[in-house]
Amino acid sequence: MDQNQIIDILRQGLMVALRIGGPMLIGGMAIGVMVAIFQAATQIHEQTLAFVPKLLLVIAFCLLGGQWMLQTLQEFTRMLFTQMLV
Image (cartoon, rainbow, N blue to C red; front, side, top):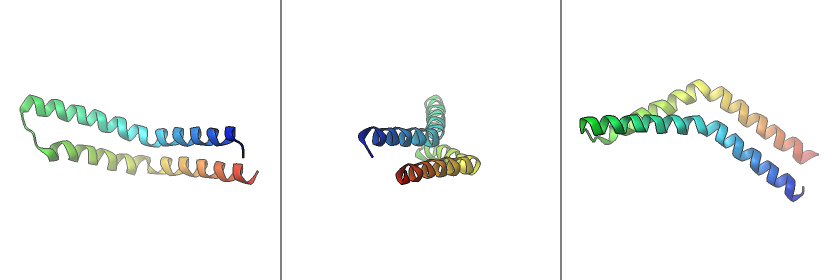
């Protein structure tokens, strides 16, 4: 295994991580901004008000996209093992 193959595997691993974690992070940021605007408008500064919607979003995403996330990780793992054997 040469240096170019290792760099390619690392790049693919980072892309898989972004593909899996990106939607949750973007959704969490959007919910966070909406909650922050609501808190600023109403002057309610409750910590749980900022935490609970993000938690519910992540749980919903895991329930709805869990199968896709698992398939993506399995494909990447299979690709890694086939490259190691060759």
